[in-house]
Structures are given as structure tokens and as C-alpha cells.
Amino acid sequence: MNILLTGANGFIGKHVSIFFESQKEYTVFKIARSFHERSKNNIELDLTDKNKVMKFAREFKKKHTIDAIIHLAAKMAGSKQKHIDAFRLFDVNLEIAKNLTFIAQSLLPRKLINFSSMAVYPNVDGVFDEKFCVNMSENTDCLYGLAKFCAENIFDHFLKNENMVITHLRVSQVYGDGMNKSRVMPMMRIELKEKNTVTVFGEGKRVSNFIHIDKLLEILRLLVIGEKSGVYNVGDEEMSYLDLAKRIIKENGNEYSRIIKHSPGSRVKFILDTRKLNSALKS
Image: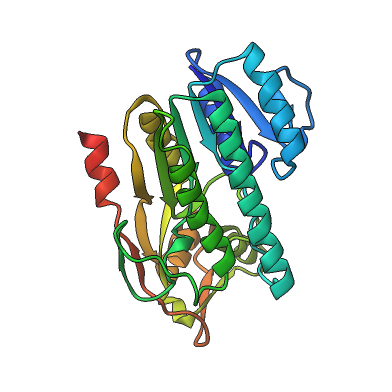
């Protein structure tokens, strides 16, 4: 099976690449803006550049067929983003979606697996399944979530007549080796190593969903070989940030490690309902 992977240099993309390349039945063609190493299967391509994308698609389909596209490429939201930067992020992600649509129409894979995000849901108390009305207007990463939702609809609309299995994965917080050090788990580990403390805000009462990269890869493998289309929430553990801090201390701390609770901060209890995916993978 030939897989075209976008966003191959990201945290998840690197793991996806290694995972499928380690299995002899898969050939992975990787797209990223640049690569440190040269390889016949590494494709340097700016997915926001329509002319370069069109040229790539024309040339690539002369030599190769693609069975599945795994679409990870996206511009991520920064923690301290100005309004103008947020709109730029939105525009970039829409350009990526539009150009990925052209690639899919040109290469006509049997399936497209699109990595969306739980950022399409409001960051408020509640249980969120795939039928919940998306509303990201109150979220700090509003335009990132909006771009992800727009991408889902762009693919569904423009590829609906292409006999293609389209799967959208609204993924929770992914963790594992190589993840961005600005994410909550690495930040906790860094503080623990330097100060032997872990600080939690909102007294650690915030609840979110987390999934280890290895579990995500196994889910992805099942989707690649299966025929499941539609939108799926993808996650694993619901956990408070206080419990997360306790786990990290248990794994990396000692008897003198302690948790520092600050009252200011989010206390949102966000529950991602993954029953639809769990049921689909069993059938």
C-alpha cells in the first residue's frame, strides 16, 4: 500500500512515518517544507503554494499511485498570538486544505484520513460527541479550530464524487517522545527536574483528554486498512491536571516532590466522547 503523508516533520508525522515504514507492506511518501535527509520518498513542498502543488501533482501521478493520504500538515496556533497572526494562521490552513483537495482529486487515493482537532468544540464544561454543534468562538485558538472545521467540509464537498473514503479525526492531546516542549506534560517534567515541583493552575481541576502516540498509531493503522468514513473523536484518558501532575511525580519524582496549586486558571471539565470510534473499530 502506498501512503502519501503530509506534515511528515511534525511530532505526530514523524511517528506515523516510522510506524508505517517499519512494516514491509507500506511505502510512505512524505511531504514537508524541508527535510534534513535526502530520500527518494521525501518530497519538499510548500502546501500553501498552489502553483508548486499543481506541478507536484501532475508529475507525481505519472510515476506513482497512492492508496491513502494521511493529512497532518497544519500551521499551529501560538500561545501569545496577535489578531493579525491568528487571521494569517486561518488563511494558511485554508490554503493547505484547498491545495490538498487538488492533490486528492489528481491522485485519487482510495481513502483520505484527515487529522482535525478537538479544538472544533468549545472549551467549556460538558461531554462532546461528534453530533455536538461546533463552536470555537470562546476558545483562545478559535481560528485554528475554525480552520480545522472548514477543512473537514472542504474535503467532504469537493471530494464527494471521487469514490473516496474520507475520515476526519478530531484528536485530543497527543503525548509521547518528541512532543513539543511547550505542551503541558513536558512543562511539568521540566519543572519537576529543575525544582522538584509541579505547578497546576485552577488548583489542577481542569479536565481534558489525552492519548499516547502509540495508541493513536494503532487506531490509525486500523483506519488505514478499514473502510470507516465520517467524523470520529479520537482520545483515550480523561484526566484532571492534578492527577496528571501526580502521575508525572510518580514516574519521575521522589519522596520530596510536591505539587503547587494556584487558584487562578481554567477549571473546565471537557469530556471527549469517543464511543463512536470505539464501536466502529470493534465492528
